[in-house]
Length: 194
Image (cartoon, rainbow, N blue to C red; front, top):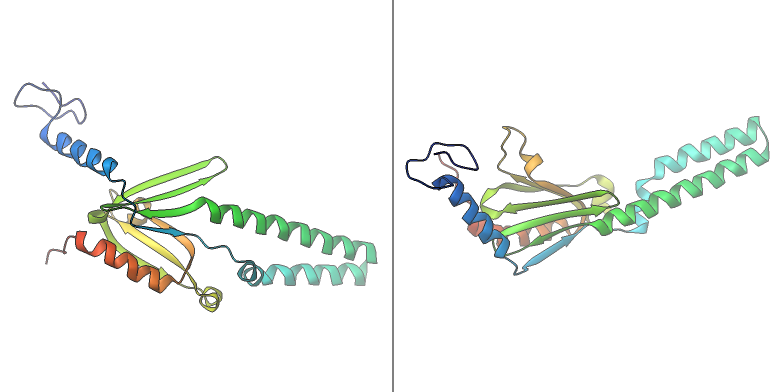
């Protein structure tokens, strides 16, 4: 007889091998973990969004000046109108993305969800599978107190740990948030073998 999940040869009569059964039991345990401990959301800030796209403004202003200098005033006005329309769409889009992104920490797992339009991503990562949590900040983010959090998990593909982890951009008070995550996750981390 063979295991109905992995196809391994079974020594005793049955449907599933001990390895697959152990994995199944662990997954069922994780599903039962519903006690919420901490939540992180992507932050949306209009002043930050305005600063974030300052290069785009510069391009539009130069284009509008070019239209006025080599065309007519109507083309320059149209260029400004297009700029405000495009930036309005970008701001709306960024706000919806921020509302769709969150990570919820439970007693033994973290669940990352991104649910926007037709994209539905949910990743469940056990604390014992997390290899590293780090952050980075761009200069503009640092000015507004934001940062990007990266969660790295044990990967099936060597060197591709972020594929099993996740990233949340524009987290408010990123250093304080990282400390809080460390307090939650640290007891479950398995020390590295030397």
